[in-house]
Length: 613
Image 1 (tube, rainbow, N blue to C red):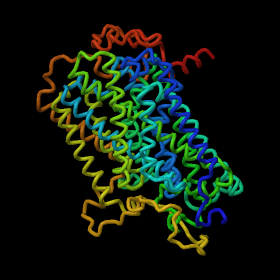
Image 2: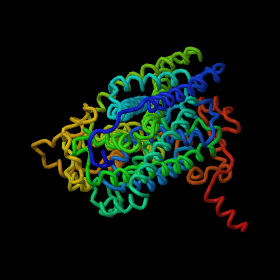
Image 3: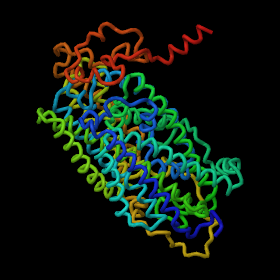
Image 4: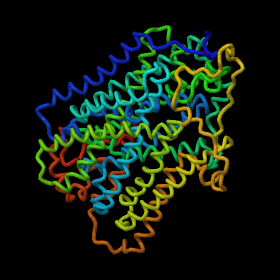
């Protein structure tokens, strides 16, 4: 069969299975190694935060790997194939997100010495707000993690014929093993290994695609002719799925909510030994995100160049858009034993990194927000057993959520929509507390509830009544070059996901469907944040927010936090009344003297170098 003309593809070979299984065993082995290495230190802080002794580069790679998951490996190339290279503009969003997180949120959280980000909500508001925030995070993370498990299982099901639920359970069990035994250190060092495997998988697809098509120039020219390179659309219409403004404005705020207040990410950078290392990890992570998204998008463009005359989805070769890249891999790489196994290992590695980090973060917030406040006299040994038990519980919960994820259509968009609907209002709640002293618990709670209701209304409405093509702008595809001697109903493996991704539009569309429900999924986070802040300020003003007793100044963003993490020690900050928990943590880290760090101001350093020159 000629490449790119449709039809059945080769199955997995023995060497593919060897490479795939070997990769998974190495990942699990890293977790076991960390467990054996740290068996003398079984404290809860060691399990959840790596003893606050991590450095920037491994943490940065872990940050990148945890959200550049199997969803990215499978979903982003399919996005570029169907809608073009506009996804590349997220590189700008990553830069904005990294800067805001490193210069606004990190100094605050690091100064307070928190383990769970939701501890801040109790410090700033009250226990009820903290409990609601934690519950929202647990629901969001469990559902998202279910989607992450589902993505590579879909790939394996497509190209190997392995039972889908068998793969789902196996994924969860491997993550449970090294999360339960190794804690955060195991998760971070495993992520480093898995990040390298993910990048290698993309490079293999692009390199072989270039050989098949006759060079990278030919791929670029095909994509130009097919309209895949028209990335910059400056139309301000908020209903259009991807424009420059929806990605830069909506995408930036969505990624800020994912990195600045999401426990899975915060837990990593507060595990760094110094504030400088914590900030540096975010800037290195930004570069990692750029490299990963570039390779993922170019893999999608390579896929379009090969299938520009025979779309496998329309031709019936695959049953879902998210099975396109696995199909391509078996089409162009099956002649190289072990290489398809490397790709599947890449998708699987992305999943393992995200699932393991999610399980570890879920354990952290459950222990800190639900167990410790009720049972305050637990010993370290008891906490250690609770941590391991919760790792097992959340692992199996996420496996169950994978079944729910199978009903949500396009994996990439559904995953980002979940973060927009839930993280947007939560981000608004944090910003309200960090910047406005007049905000009180009543205002914050009402704002959070109203923001959540509004975003769920729009987001769920958009799932029930998907936007029409004039808003999503799918690019043209063709089947003119397909080998039609085969049965067009053929599918490599009959996918049980086809009903989810090819759901027909409802016969009846209410008036709101083409306006309110068609709002770009990237603006869900913006909507939730704005509604929460505005409603929170209004309700706080009505309920006496201006008459509150004096609040602790360390709960707010201060001048020296903003792009100047150590521009001379602010005496007001140095003498802050740090809470008891922070005092207990002051001795942790190599030079963590009260979380006041040596100078780390990239802008000032550049100016200083210029002056010397």
